[in-house]
Length: 235
Image 1 (spheres, rainbow, N blue to C red):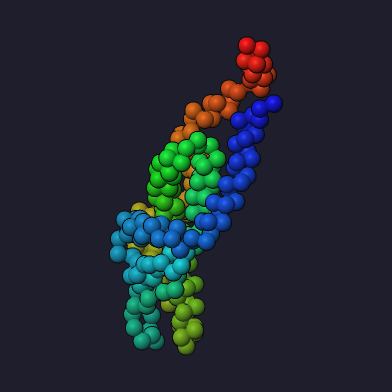
Image 2 (spheres, helix red, strand yellow):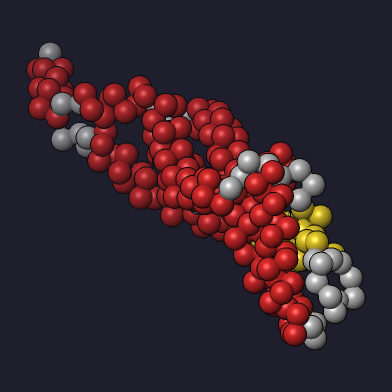
């Protein structure tokens, strides 16, 4: 009896998916490279001149930004850089090994596999970068006050840390509101980039690129296949 295409696909996927995830984790720094660069572009498009620095730290999108706290007395300066901030790229990029594993389990030639990988990974790099950028912007919009207060308290300015945090919050809120990114909209966009895009986009891409294969899974009839094999044997 010939094994059904569905069972063959399931067994193949069970083999390739763990392998793709292991390779993805081992090459996490390489995976993060294009995503970090695109995330910086998206962040600058949404909030121009907000980030004073952005780069890659292994599989992290690392960034810094400057806040204005000039209205707070007792500080050595009116501007403070909040550095050592980061977003884990792999939280968003798990869509890539998922897509690669499904593709290699469903294609019949390596040429088709590599073509689909090229198309799919390009799209996924963009969606992952968007999610990373939205996470960074939401963290800035929602957590600047605490970050400023903690930095000043650690630097010996605990007496004015809370007041500086409030001033920094007001400064950041004003900048985001001027760009049309209120906190509710940003929170909704961040959830979309974190919860919806990573699991949905690779599946949709795989379906679109393997429509013929999926139709063969749905339309395959085991009894008809066995009858056809028997007929060929009798002939």
